[in-house]
Image: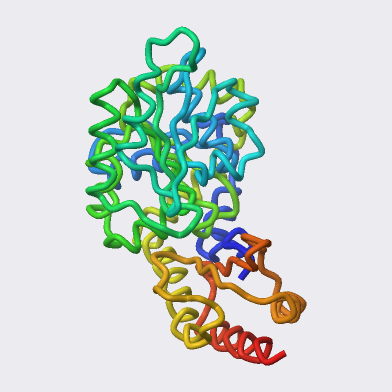
Length: 341
């Protein structure tokens, strides 16, 4: 329940790694696995895209933004965006780019947020808003609909800004919004997103994320930039082989859907505890209950999960692709017992 990062890799992914380990292959992406994985991304999005692989999610976001920004540019995002709260200031330190954060109770950016800062463009004293970055699904477990993404992209592009989507939990969002390539396209490439950080680690991979350029011209120097920011994996076939397994069937959508379904099952089995404050079903794979200290400590001693808003006694429960119904039953019973303390 701590995080979907705590889950292991799906057995089919592990076997894909074993198969990729059989022979020698040229390094730095000059291998048949990487070629095949890139074609699968073309197939997934229904058009020619440019896909590059990196070690992890922070590297994916930094690489994407590095290809989109110029000196003195800034990134418009919410104060709860993953790049703002969970990456130790990596975009600012590595790229030297200001994050212009906007308040948002549901962690979702709006077109008005963009309009509120575009007047800074052309002002010599201010960092220049150049990229809009949205997190899908958000850190609060909320979702942008395809229509909302389209509106954001339309306003951003109208004012000369590019759009980046941080999809660390893209599998969960895709499963919730239709569980098909068509549904995925509807809120990414078809909505106008320029560059996508495509999350695989939280969706059953061992390691490795992808950066997908729908606006392929933005990737003209991506290989050099990836090397410079230390995200070039020499034995890239081991990342690519995992993506082949993830995308050649519906495994990507299936694993995201399983995690979401288990979060919904946990909600159904615990929402009758009014003190938890679980008033609406989760959109994806996270719940944010309110738990008083004694009960929280008893429950955390048995099954660790993260504090979320400590002063207000809020915590985060998160389900992963490998959680099963019996796990939910056991945890829900433990919650019931802890709340009696």
